[in-house]
Image (cartoon, rainbow, N blue to C red):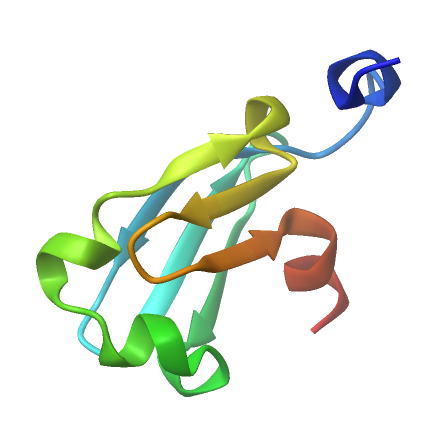
Length: 81
């Protein structure tokens, strides 16, 4: 079974990612936007603008992955903060 087969149809997924000067902003499939300080994610804080913007979704949006900075953030983690 792949992870794609276990995503709940009602799961809240990431649909967009952007950055402000000191925050990570994640738009969610239910219309909410979560933003957190980059201080919480030192690898992203220390990454260049270009590295931050080279992200991809994990399993259709249950998380976000930054290959160059070796960072993975789950939407469920963002919703718990």
